[in-house]
Length: 338
Image (cartoon, rainbow, N blue to C red; front, side, top):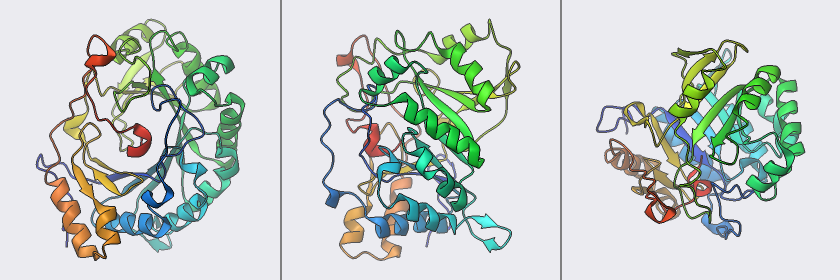
């Protein structure tokens, strides 16, 4: 049995991000190619396999689960999945081991699921939204509808879910909107998190020319906003600042310019059952094959332990002078889990 999930650098693994599908109803330019070939259904973990692996991780030290995709809310059994996970949460009448259950979504189906999520015990969600301009939204997502995402955000607020808006910062695409997004998040009572673009998979776009170091963005925003560093943590890699004018938080996720590896407490489970111990590395463990070959939980625990024992000290993302010089995993973020 695993007594703990601790990697060679002494980092305790308490946070699991679970991709439940590689499918998405959008094709964001920094995440997917426009013409994607999705995995056969048989390659994707079924409901019971997902629950089994999540249970093994929670039994051995994981206290936060974040459900991701692709777009997790396009999966047909996602409602019952959240309802079951919610029974593992610590409540006054339940001595569960799970401390937090969260979701990252593009918001397009959030209006349909907001109440279900809240009833299951979810209390905060991250919504990916890179622009408030309808035409620009359609261009970035290639097929998304801004109105649907905004409707989902309103529904989440109405049922009492806390919101963080995740925005990928892209030079020449949305770098003129950060002030607008900060002000809008203040109006709706949400935090804003800016994220540097990462070289994950072939998207058919030149990410090198779009890359923005967020330290430069922060310096520019500081000319117009009162930004004070605060020690808040939410389990992930964001570093937070308090926005004096709105009272909300601005998060910065900087995998390229200022990596967050020293405090990494996360591993990722892909929708195919592959455990990735580092977002920027390919090494891990094929847990699906073990399960489908009849492995018991002890064998799964050992495979997880062995993979975490190889968890690298840091990732090796690299953006060069052109897209040809980009270095990073060949898998798309939608397979890995955001």
